[in-house]
Image (cartoon, rainbow, N blue to C red):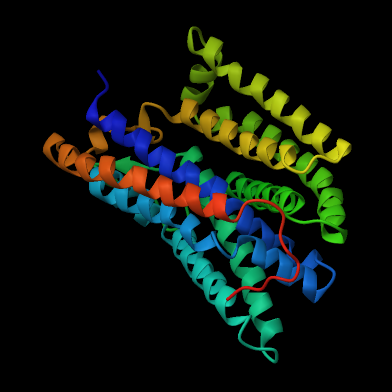
Length: 333
């Protein structure tokens, strides 16, 4: 039998992972926006995610709201520890969302909204990476409260993870456009995807080497038996995903590079889970310690069991309806 707190930790982890892989590619499109050659290509790139981008952010709301509801202590510690990157991320997402709507309504101010879209997407991705790095390096907790300083989140390691997420999201955006477009933009994104993949994998390697240095517990979880037998599966699968990604790009495949890129993110997320579990906030706050009372977990779980399949259903339906290649002549309304 799984503990209720563990079940909820899995639900929150699933929501966060779903947000990362779904919103990652449309943030990646914003990061790549300056490198699109023509106005038509920019319109086409935005149209490729127009039907789904706002629905993708449902998972961010679920992850944050779920953390507050079922792990209130973790929420109360993480928020003051990461006020700055979280606030900047939310402001960037607002600017990006507004730019998404307004750039279609004006010609005179279109360059301004393009800048907002580029800046919002890049800043949101960078802040997400910084927040991840700050969590990995550990948050100081004393007497069940945040005990660190205002700038503890800012370090060379968190900046490195910030750049890693930006490059990784750009890879997702490039492979998404390879899958969704044809012609010049398809060829251009295929050409960009190779160096972005190399950069992403290189940064994953550097971050992976530095992570055990952040806390000795990480080293024990990855390199002691019997956990080592399981944890070595992740690098092996990562090599397989890398092979599929480069093979798909070289052979002219449209779908497999995007799926391989998603797999790389999923495997990296699994690696973070191996490093963290059973803590929800490293190095010392466990899932059970941070959880709300069992009665609250049970009550929230009833609603989640009903709503989660509905969210998954309408998300799958939206992607199914807008599957396939983009029609260059269709617009966003």
